Length: 187
Image (cartoon, rainbow, N blue to C red; front, side):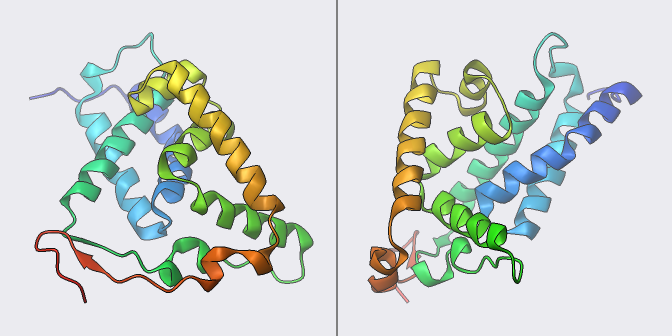
């Protein structure tokens, strides 16, 4: 049984909750799932406080826990939706009457079109401001892989943002079906 974490450690974890939620929200595209991930990650971190090395980066440690829980949950799902019409970036709305809001919406849509590995690296390094080494530890990949993925993510994002929305192939693609993972059935 693990002992109760110190009040200082608890306060440090609480101070990271907003960043954890931002990262979880971007991973999932769903506010409720993101909140559940953050709660699960915070609970796990507090219950395993004794395994945290004080000389390491708490934020990177917490984001690693959060990402591992997210991956475990993805693996545990029996079905996954592949219908492009229900993708999270399709339903994001810009604030009414704001050009900046439209730019933000376009950026969010493009971000969700990136492959997950590129999106994760971009978020960890550019949004969460982790070093390459810290992002490497969170993702469990070599630092060179982080740098390569980040470079590809930036190029891909730039290309997506430069593309004319009327020529977006995703707008004209036929929606895909929900596929049952366990039995290979379709609906």
